[in-house]
Length: 96
Image (cartoon, rainbow, N blue to C red):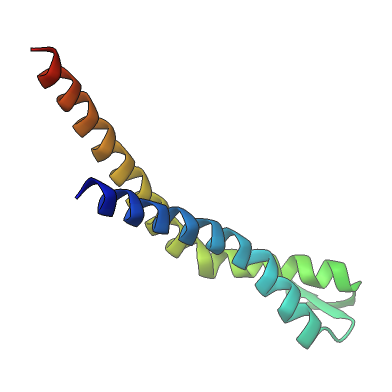
């Protein structure tokens, strides 16, 4: 049971790291596919560089991935806390 718990916790850690990596990757891919040399800021169309456009795309990608990252981090932290509590209880039982 403890091994399964550690594997699931590791999976959520890797999932969280992949979600962090997904933000810049999705922004760069979106910029590579959609950049036309113009950025839209507050309904104003202005010329911009590719990196500026990619930064804007990364900013908007954050809004897509943050909820998933929050859930993955919350599950990981909850499982880590549960594992910590179980280890403390086991140590106290061994001391008695």
